[in-house]
Image 1 (cartoon, rainbow, N blue to C red):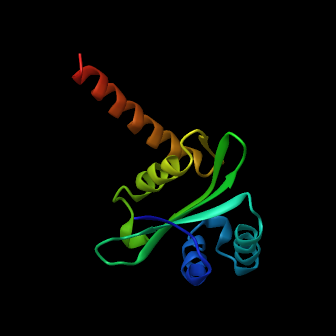
Image 2: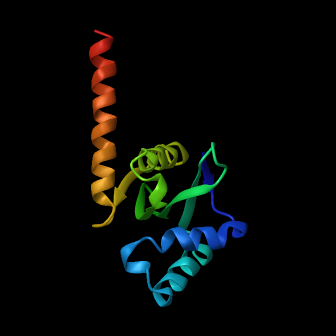
Length: 130
């Protein structure tokens, strides 16, 4: 389930962000977390696993006028390879339907795979309706 970050999830969010390679160091992690809390153009969204009721992933974004920049994606190791990144991106698209979703050098490969999956879905729907 795609949910917005709130202060009660701070420790969980920091733990998930620590999976990001350049945020393993607490000296870098804390300022990054603070930037998500303090800047209105930055937001964190979380993924709550419905079976376990645990927060298992997050996506950190920077909102621009017509674009959402995905800055960070982190998934708990035991929940990887389950399609959660695609579900996070689906949730993001639902929250910002008129915005383009773009990534940084680190997140762009995830977005490219998601875009390809979206295109394949659209192609299947189009060919199925002919």
